[in-house]
Length: 360
Ligand code: DP6
Image 1 (spheres, helix red, strand yellow):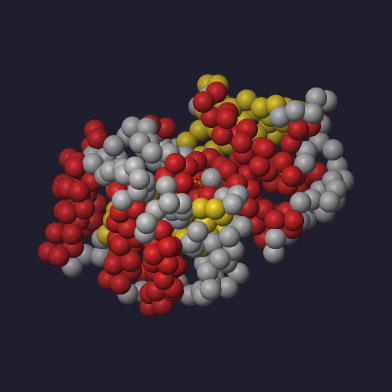
Image 2 (image 1 turned 180 degrees about the vertical axis):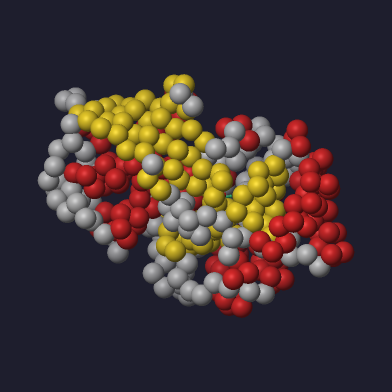
């Protein structure tokens, strides 16, 4: 399959005005995407859990117009947010060839997140996923074939979301999504995310993710800058190989449910991601002292109690604490008593795996 698959031939219906709304979740990568090429193509395959409680709701209102220019306004929680508009403009420019109607409408994009904007949780994955879903729904209403197969719709939404933000293509469906062509994963593609196609052990059902908000500030390094630093990175080739190898190793683990092996890979991925940032030119330290405190306490707790709790990290200081549903009571208790003091204002978000974007 190539990009050309996503270029529509013609539309049957014209929409004069209307609106579409979607709710789309965030996701947390187990094997990380860090390094890209071409137009938003990943240097290695990645896999993530789709989340449930961290999501973006977006309403896209549209009005047909004459002037053939992009025309849109973005609102966050009811207030105009011009700061988001350059990113959306770039997104519209990238996807126009796949959505040729874009310049013939005035759009109002009204969005809100379930998590505070300043929480340090990236809203780009859920936000771009929600917007892509709205646009695909709009296109569907214009199409000859109103009953466009659900599979095709989801694939196009993921394809478009990727052009807005790479990891967003993993936020259309749940609960375990692979993005990036991988030799051992049938159907995997650099162009869009797919549902993990093999057997998954019950140990991973409703997997828990409690997000500890260690640092709620603006990102120190944007993901675009971070990904670009991988171009000249001395360890880049090794890192891309490590990620693809880790994904290969996860296949039997996801089937047999061996949590101790799962933990080794997930934590190595988080530390390796940060190692890339530490050793790039210039280097970045995105962990905070409290991030390290939390990691050490998770390790001690695991050793002392035989728990299967582990951590992963995004490109920031917050810690995602991952654990099986069966350990919910004990791990939440541990978080409240031992880890909460290391969170900014004691804040954390209790989340778990979820099933993807839905229309509202
Ligand atoms: C560390 O998807 O935010 O979260 O494609 O430039 O928008 P862009 O990058 P982005 O990068 C996410 C990186 C990560 C790892 C991951 O989610 O796989």
